[in-house]
Amino acid sequence: MVPNQRWALASCRVEMRAETAEQVAKNAIAKGDVLAAARIAGIQGAKRAAEMLPGCRLVALDATSVNFSIGERSIEVEVDVRAQDRTGVEMEAMMACAAAALTIYDMCKALDRTMSIEQLALWERADGHSGSWRRSPGEPSEP
Image (tube, rainbow, N blue to C red; front, top):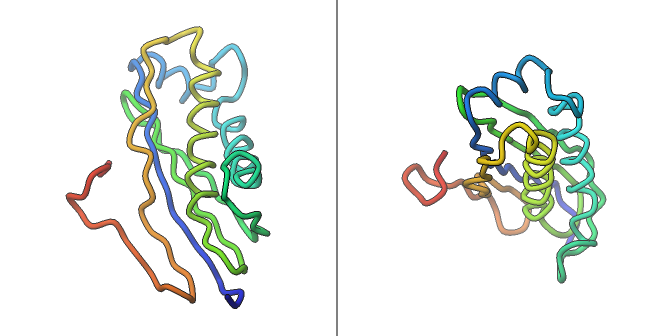
């Protein structure tokens, strides 16, 4: 396979009590800046996907973007991963989402043990070999 531009978008949501989301938004969690730590964890998760997942190939990533949206009772995690390589970056994007979400959970668990991580899913992917794919509205895991 020839190296091509590869791209993937994944997301998940961390459900929590309203008080917990408010504390994260105020940067008032005792362990520190939750979203900064989760962003670093997400980037590390993308870079280390091949170490964690049997059969996942090592990909030289060009960019990993980890973004958050704080809702009244949740934090949405969205990850965009790009690479110029011979294999896709779907697993890197999903691993980054999971690592970021787990970091949010870890940093907030003293305040809220009711949290849950939900709807981890690939939303879009593109490469020069097998084309593009986008999850259709109404498919499982719709946020």
